[in-house]
Amino acid sequence: MTANGSPCRYSVSIDSNKMRLDLHTHSIKSDDGRAKVENYCKWIAKKELPLDGFVLTEHRQFDADSDYRQLEDEYGLAIMKASEVETDYGHVLVFGVNDDLLAAIDFTNVRLPIETVLDESRKAGAFAAPCHPGRKRVGLFAHYEERGVVQGVDTVEVLNGGSIPGEDELSLAMADRLGYRGFGGSDSHVVSRIGFCATDFPNQQIVDMEALVHALYGGNFSAVSMRPGDSD
Image (tube, rainbow, N blue to C red):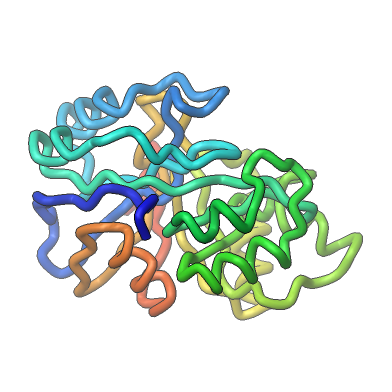
């Protein structure tokens, strides 16, 4: 997987029984992102956020060039890279992007067939899952109401730090009804929102994207909210 995110060489787990990762963030590499990766790291340290790392899921692209190993070492964080693509059933996060997947899918296409994204991701050894599914227009479940259920979906983002009231509630209810596993991510576009939602991986040491993809396929994880006012 030569285009995969660079591995974390140094990670300090806040809780030895689990790793907590924010699986959905955006930096200035995204067209609407205003956060520098180094500033995310500084914010996590300053606020003593209980995060072991985060995943950069830039819009409609995969950032194969940026190297965050120095920041990983300096701050003791896992910093991984993934993508957020746009499909005919809403937005989808893709973890484990590699050359095979980049050749199979045009990440700039805003109307990718979701079946293609799911199938090609599996073939390439990546993991694809819809994000903010309870959101109007860009969420999976809004399309379910009109077009029916997509086969092949088994995991969705049930807690999203950018959700408005009602969206996460719908995501949680629908995921429970359909038997989907759920993860969390902040969907941060500014520094101060990182970690609003995250994902706990019990008894797992996730040091690179390969390990994260393995953990996501394994299914042993849970979403957690750290939004102001929410209890951990």
